[in-house]
Image (tube, rainbow, N blue to C red):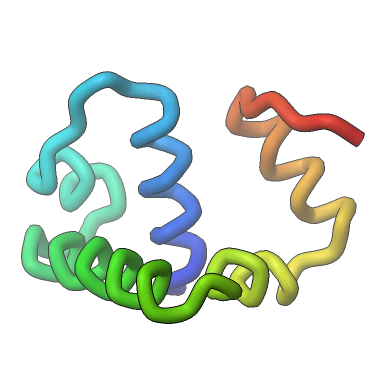
Length: 78
């Protein structure tokens, strides 16, 4: 699912200093072009729609988000 891949890309980018499209493509088992499209779509939507991230997270429950952050060693405040 694209939203899962976008969240995964964001998580990887937060944890690493340098990430390449081929690395992401291999990790998510998709083509490099798919990764490039995902990143282009992300930036386009973030710039034109400031509620993009909110609407992306809106589909998840609070518990889902907390579990996701814990599973990926991301800091959060409750």
